[in-house]
Image (tube, rainbow over all chains, first blue to last red):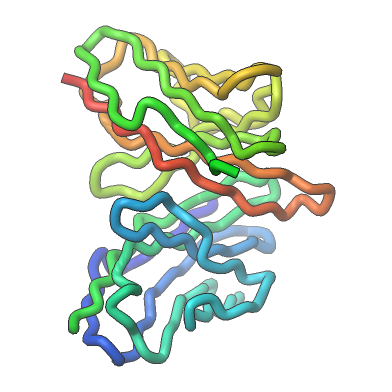
Length: 108
Length: 116
């Protein structure tokens, strides 16, 4: 069965430091991977998807099929990046499987 | 476009009562998804519906839970005879589902259900 893991429940970094939120998945086919973000008191929203190969708010994520990973990275964290981040996988049935989430706290 | 709307935002029920959660998708969206987030856990898929059809309910508990998305009106997630373990945040998402099949889901703000 498909599964998404995010090993860190909480990640704290200082402003200006690089940040990497880890995501690993298990899926027998070719998955579609996403990162969702939920800022304080706001709804969950899409941050980026691997097929777009885009950089949003300075974040990038590369799908590594060999390591079955889709880590989210940003070279210089900002305080406004503090939020809950969810890695998600979509299977052929269009169903989403979400990871447990990582709370990113960017300290001043 | 107001985005995905869910109501109520907070719902308190006593054990054994029924809970009805509503989701109005974004305008023009005909696909709705329901997710549950238990405390300290990630989002878990429950059910995927199109207008008047349940496409996939593999994540839905077999008993007490049901969902519908009528031709007119919001999608309803119904929980009968609620128990304390049903306390969670329930999120709805909608998508346009273009012919390409890869489509963004837009999430509502969620309904927080508390069972006393």
